[in-house]
Length: 140
Image (cartoon, rainbow, N blue to C red; front, side, top):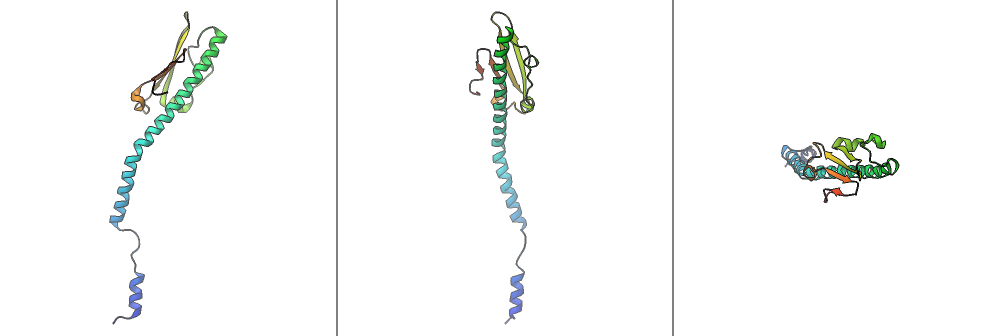
């Protein structure tokens, strides 16, 4: 029969740390979660950037209406409206204004997605015109 102190020593030598199999399983689980979550996260980031661009386009359209009231024509660019594109919108979209001051005057503001934003809406540009028509329809 073995002494009780030997049995106590065996109990004290309990394994510490993780085995390689446990560590591999944990890494595999984290990798699977990342693979599943990353596309959803990227889609939400694109949607957020699109919402910021839509808000900026609405601000430009409102300023254009005020500019028309004051100047009897639409502004050809953002500088004439005393506006700048916010950094988060400028990083994802290129904003352009096409204004004609004929009879009747018209404008179209376009937000063309840059490379990081291109997968959103299949690369379609966001537009709003002087009549308030917005395209593409499902984006707004």
